[in-house]
Length: 240
Image (cartoon, rainbow, N blue to C red):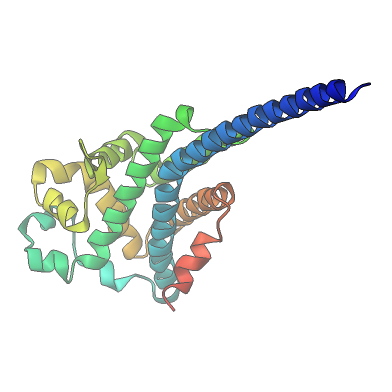
């Protein structure tokens, strides 16, 4: 083979390799972009759900621990029934009422995140059958609360009330308190308030344990899905 032929073969070979590398690199970049977008989409749902799951588990664990040790959780024993909220001042919501009402607010936010995630599970991209498992674990939490007379339809209603449209953010604690001060709106949260009052009084301990177990299982799944640490343990460590 003469020099010209060698040069042409080398040029063709080099060009083919370069073109192949460009195609491969482009394909990898598109795959990386799709994977990044998928992860961002997933975490936009799962991270908030994970955070509220840890918060609710932590707060209800305080109720359970106090009830086991002392028979009740005294900081939340501030009402005889939900309608007494109607006459409470802003100072009460910012002071004496915080342990009870903030717990109700946190649980309402969890309902909101579960409702939002459940509706959009078809658009999430989770490995294998994780989407089915996520839906089952969310339903398990719903069922646990339903056993406490906070019925499924009520949970969805409470969760929807917490979501502010069109921005899609959740109500702050203060905004939630303003909502509760409206009797016609508060009545939808009454079952959740009754539940917190009952467990604060040391009642419904088996039901509370069922809720805690379901929330813990959901939290563990979210930790695995997001490759994060143990969020429940981290939440307790934050209080030390």
